Length: 204
Image (cartoon, rainbow, N blue to C red):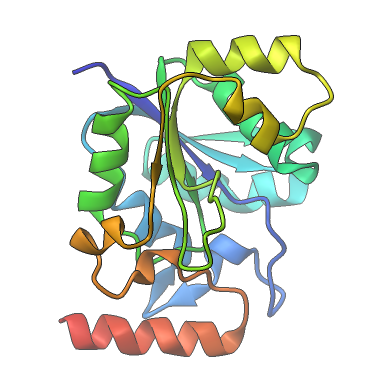
């Protein structure tokens, strides 16, 4: 199996005066739960941020996980610009993208994304609302760099339709990894923190 890179997006706004991925959940920064489910096939890990303050905040944790902090104002733009920057920054043909604020992701799911992207140009889940989750997906670098370069103005939905062999994952199909689909839970406020901590307690 080919090696893969992982890019973890930490470009979202924090709360409680703390960067989103560094907000503590059950005693450790939220992004660590994501870092811990990065598959063994991943050889390079990147934490992607959109300003210098975030970059500095994540540097110590990045060193601990042998990761590299990526800084770009492209990460403040559209989903398309974020995906393009992440894929362009990777050193391998297969690229796994994950958000830093999804602490209930599972290794089985992330491993499946990486393995499936050996055969498919992209492997992209859809949540219960049938929304396409481009930042929790895996991609082959070459076909996407090609469509990015040829279609400068089109959004991500339009670009993906130009790529052959894209696998979309329905939320029902993902229940084999997570029956309650908690992988899609994004922590964006204090009540989400309490909910995740309660779920983690029940899992022990």
